[in-house]
Image 1 (cartoon, rainbow, N blue to C red):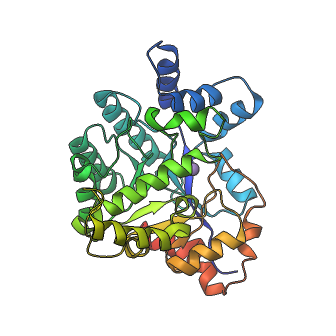
Image 2 (cartoon, protein in one colour; image 1 turned 90 degrees about the vertical axis):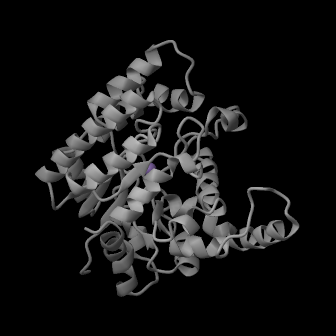
Length: 340
Ligand code: MN
């Protein structure tokens, strides 16, 4: 084995963020039910929650020990869901700046082991674009992390496009990571316990990614690169039918927001997206994603600490693919998209 294993969707939080989460939970204000289900659980008293909260705040020796124990050379760190996106704009913007400074400090302490993505607050798109630029140019961060919807709003709304304009100009990717579905969507998921990573995350985030495609974001920003976890939140599996129905809907004019694009929806998925294996340590779906998106578009991720299984890399180590393709999966694709 000559490759390094880089893990591309590895979460952290810091005491400053968790203090804000605790305050929000205790505020008595009407809360996003998704946020309540997520952080009401993790900031609770169960042993599993306590262990998770301890791991997720460690940007030093403990995390590096876990990386060594699981064969990971380097983590691409990103602020955990829902990041700063649940706060009012001024708080969110200030918090993103502070957390990015602390992340960059951790990367400076362990430059060979960590790289990081800049947290931004889409609530204020102009400030978010500015913080992305500062994160990349001043702090050496490698792109942006956005935890899907921001208080029920999606990035296909042109008011958010200054963020994409900045990412394209800086030539860095935007990682769109899941969060729980927004209030308008969560009901049927929450009532049966399926709002979280078990299913709701992927449905909501897959919708978000598809909205970017059908709204024409990539006709406006053709060089923009999006990274998606969980092997593309099921979109690769849907590609044939999405193309078929999109063509039919354009032809019959069935909805004003399904209009002609320069390319087929699947073309954007192949040319403007990278997907990571986070949480999907299963050979058939990894091979499927590689076969429909190309081996240059699929990269390894672990989803530490949420899905930390020390022996997990055996699954990808044992994929029936060439060593050259394995090196792309583990190392070269990540080095290219994140400019490591
Ligand atoms: Mn994750």
